[in-house]
Amino acid sequence: MFDPTSFAADQPLLVADNLAKSYGRLKACRGVSFKLYPGEVLAIVGESGSGKSTLLQMLSTQLQPSAGRVSYRMRDGVLRDLTELGEAERRFLFRTDWGFVHQDPAMGLRMAVSAGANVGERLMAVGWNNYGKIRDTASTWLQRVEISLDRIDDAPRTYSGGMRQRLQIARNLVTAPRLVFMDEPTGGLDVSVQARLLDLLRGLVTELGLAVVIVTHDLAVARLLSHRVMVMQGGRVIETGLTDQVLDDPREPYTQLLVSSILPA
Image (tube, rainbow, N blue to C red; front, top):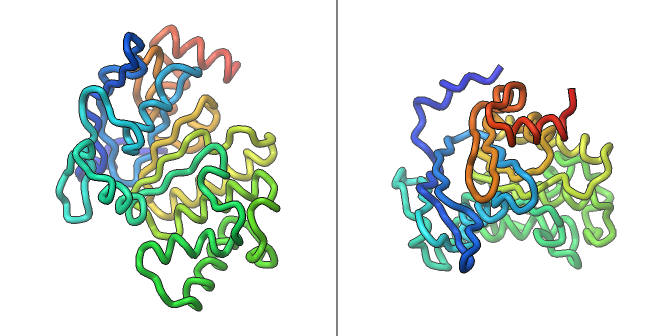
């Protein structure tokens, strides 16, 4: 059973403060505030168009907010306003502290180079320069995500969808990030492939103590992976709480409808 007090001694790793994004009259996201703690998994759920993907893009600095700010606690303990970071600083964070698992693995992989190179490049980006150690570490991680070593020199374009997604996970986690963003990581996969991937993800997230923000429309994914859920509708957070509490006893009518339509009794 998850203990919500287990994070109480920690300082927040990521802080969203009244985040908003508008496109003319369209308010894609409005007034979102929360704190994410080290080792905590937060699921952002809602229908298409609810604002969850816009929020994820702002949190990961891929989209500049119209209002509000996102702050991140650097390794030196300083909480920095990410909306003020330059491009070089953003890239540094993605190399050293962050990972991003896309729904489409082709967005997170180099499809024409080998699987080993895809993982090894991330190590070189953080300063590794010993080819033998890079190759050995890449091999270890391929095995950790259940890709056989006889495929290490094959390009991901020859992989199945599930294998590509597992390779993308290895590429993102090999550098031991503190925070990982996930955008519908099981979307488009067959049910049996999803189950295998979720089982793998849950084990790695727990083992590595990762902080994760995951966007999903699948409440079963949220239940399996997350400690806490935020439900979005029309760009707003309408309900938030511990995952089991929200999914088993939703307060808001929209959440009740979402739960009853996706997770029938």
